[in-house]
Amino acid sequence: MLRASILFVLVGLLATECFASSVEVLYVAERQNQSFTLLTYNVNPQTAVATQVGTMSVPSASIDPLTIGSKHFVYIWNGSSVWVYPTNSKGIPAARATQQLKFNFAYPVFSFVVDPDGKFAYAAIGWTDSQGNSDVSISLFTIDQTSGGLTSTQKVVATYSNYYTYLIGFSFGVSGHRLFARNFDDGPYTCMPGYDFYGVNQTTGDLGPLTSLIQQNADCGGTATVAVSDTLTAGQSTCCSSGSGYLNITNVVTNQQIGCQASDLAFCGDDSGVLAFDPSSKNIFYPDADLKKTFVGHLDFTNSKLIQGPSTISGVPLIYFSPDNLLVYTYKADWMRVYTFQASTGKLSVHTGFRLSGRVTVATTTLYE
Image (cartoon, rainbow, N blue to C red; front, side, top):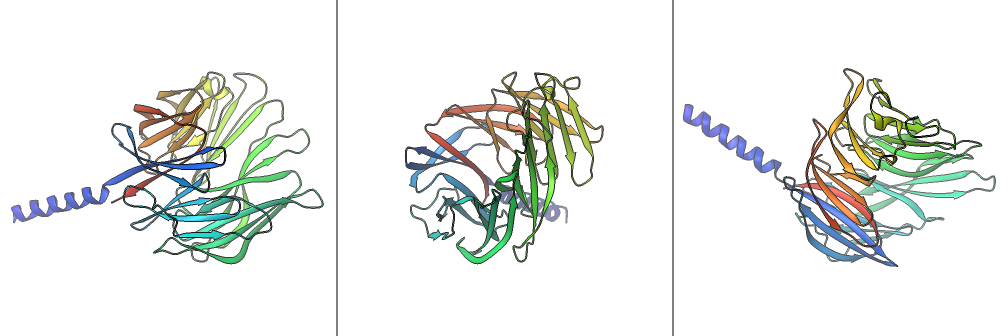
């Protein structure tokens, strides 16, 4: 009986290990003049070494990777069309797209996103009407669970119109339950970034009413930036000089808050680059534009404070994460760097780097075998 129990445990552990086997994939679309190249890398989550495993010409540089069950797809899109490429287990796209879908809208698409739950996709067009309002229309597409193919429902699921506040783009967090709408208010003497969201009906794909999430108060004499995740918002602004800023983080589920200024942590008072929460919503990455260094703040809602992590990143790069939170990618001035990451402490460990060329777009995914 004991040997049988031990065997059962070993089989269970092996099954868990096999299920947990994964491949970290980094996609980089390079643009040089009117030519676009998609580079595919597999990344070792222990050593942070990125190995290029694929390269191909593509019709655009905008990338949306998606996993549906055990199937993997890459969506490449521009203002007039979207192309669907199935990939193999390493994330390498097929040589040819299995679908090209033309949008056929009155205006070019400025934002296209696929629902991470693998059911729906949304295309947004924008224009300025005769009264000077910034208008947006969002249309719904369904995703075939076998082929990854898109079908237009011919249904507009949301419209927007405002004179001073315009929508910049759309994104999902880890889940597909909220479609985030980034906005900017440029009313008189106002320079206020923010986020709203649409609730997503996971059965029909319909969008609920636009709901306010965060609007960072700021005038145009200072700087302001915002960030969101599925559970958190962050707003940071400075009024005039280094040390004058304030960072506020809110858990939108529990309504707990963390406030941070220069007297708490020096970087909280400085101008910030693009703030970013990690996928677990346990850390915030703060690119300090004054010190030219990116700090990691670990969130402690129990004690309502931000704890400076043990690691920093040189410069103020754009920051990306692997969906499983094991890797952090940064890009600035033609250099991509890869760091191993411990979300429980905010610690960055080993890192590597490699050069890219041209203008790039970055996307990441984790494929489970």
